[in-house]
Image (cartoon, rainbow, N blue to C red; front, top):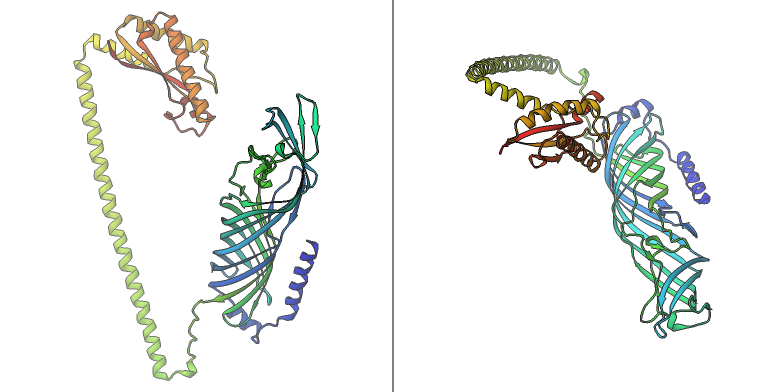
Length: 502
C-alpha cells in the first residue's frame, strides 16, 4: 500500500512540472478561466476494498478501479456543486488459517449417537468482489493560481450491482468427539465428516444493500484549451453505513445431514466462525488512490464588445440613443411594477380589515348569546355546571415518570370524589397524559399507570368502580408545545371527563 501512495504522489509531481500553461498572459487567463458549467469524464485506480474487522484471521486489501461521468455547476469563481454517476469495483481477501469452528449435538446417522464436530481451517482464503454504482453530491473549491489547486468533499449514495465470494483449494480438518463415549476421532470417518479434506472450494453471492459513503478529493487542475481541463488528484472514500443485508447467524461450516463428508461453507462476511461464535459486525466501503478527470466547459462565450474606433460616428450616436431608450423603458417598467405592488398591498389591507371587523362582530354576538343563556339557567343548573367544572379540572404537577399520587393531588381528588358520590349517576373516564420525554411505548405505560392510580384512589373514597373507565394517551395530546419544562409540566396530567349519566 505504501508503494501505491508513493507512485501516486510521484505521478502528481511529474504532471505538475511537465504540463505547460497555455500561451495566454496571466491577465487573459484570469479573465477566461472562470467556468460556469463543466461536464467531466474520470477514471481512477487504487485500493477500493471492503473494510471489516475479522474477530479471528487477517483481512488483505484488494485493488480495483472507478470510472464515471460528472457535472459541476460553479456558483462563484471558486465554489461549485457537483453530481454525476460512477461505477466502482471493490475487492478484499479474508485469511482464516488456524481458525476453529465448533458444532455441538450433531447426530450420528448410523449409531444414533450425539457427537460434537470441531473444525480447524488449515488453509482458508476467501476472496470477495463487489460492484457499486455511485451517485455523488459534492462541494468543490478551486484556488486562483496559475496551476489552480482544487478540493472537493461530499457524500455518495452507493447502490450494489453485484457481489460474490469465492474460496479455492482450502484445507479443512474435522475432528469428531462423542461426549457419551468420551471418544475423540481424528481419522478419516466419512459418515460423520471426520478427517482432513483437501482442495475444498465454495462460491456464492453476497446480499448487499445501498449505503452512504463520505468522499473527498484534492489535486491540481490544468487548462488544456479554452474549454478543456485536466484534473489530477488523490481521492479517499469511506462508507458511513453497513453494506451487509444478510444476517450473521449461520455457521461458516454447514454439515450435510445425509452425507456429512459432503459439507459446505458459506462466506466469512455472513457467518459465525470463531470459538465464541462472534461474527463480523460491519462491512464498509473503502477506497483510496489516484483519479484523472477530463472536463469540458460548455459555458457560452460572451460576445466581444466593439470599440469606438471600429464604429462610425452615426453608429456611436445610435448606440447612445438605444441605451437611453433602454434605460427609460426599464425605469417605466419599474414604476409600473411598483404601482401594481402598491395596489395589491392596499387591496390586501382592506380585505384583512374587513375580515377582522367580521370576526369582532361574531365575538360580540356570541358574548351576548352566552349572557342570555346564563340568565335563563336555574340555580340547580348553575350548581351542576360548577360541579362539572370542578370534576373535569385535570390533576397536574406530575414529575417525569411519576405514577403515584402526591398528598396535594389526593387532596384535589378528595373534593372530586365528594362531588361524584353526590352525583351517583355520572359516568367518568380517567385519561392519562405525559410530556415528550421518553419513547412512545414508555410514555403510553406511564400515562395508563397514572390513570389507573386516579381510579384506584376514587374507588377508595367510595366512588363505584363500574362508573370509571381509564385510558392512556401518552404524549399525543399536549396542552402546550413541549419546548420547555414549564410547558412539559402542564402536559403531565390526568383528565377526568364526564361521559354522561346512567
